[in-house]
Length: 151
Image 1 (cartoon, rainbow, N blue to C red):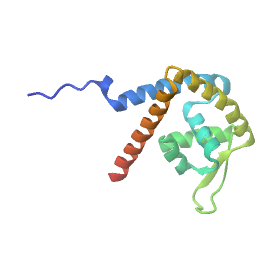
Image 2: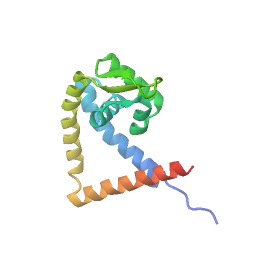
Image 3: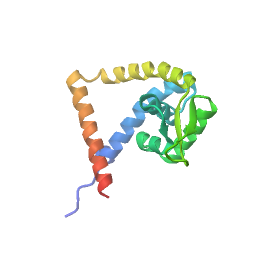
Image 4: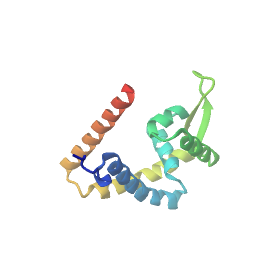
């Protein structure tokens, strides 16, 4: 007896990735044209805007992006004067990164655009479905983290 053939279109990681890319690309088109930012640049800015100063290592964990992509985004943002680097007094080998005044201004301009796009995307779901969807994503994220920590 042969195992049933798996369909990529039914595979959860594929569905999540394709959906995430579609949503990210839709929003990214807007801030790429208006602000000259790529997806990794905006993700770093968004995390710093929410969390305040962080080390690059912490940004890798918070964004779930590859350290090379985070490093590249940080260099671009620093060169544009959108983030600043300061010594980490707890660890002389790393630095804290945080939004500059210009970075906070840009973050403040982009967030309403991103939130408006989110509202448009979520308009296809009622309030209960949105709450359930977010709760399910949180549970999947937690499960993935649990599996990662168990390895």
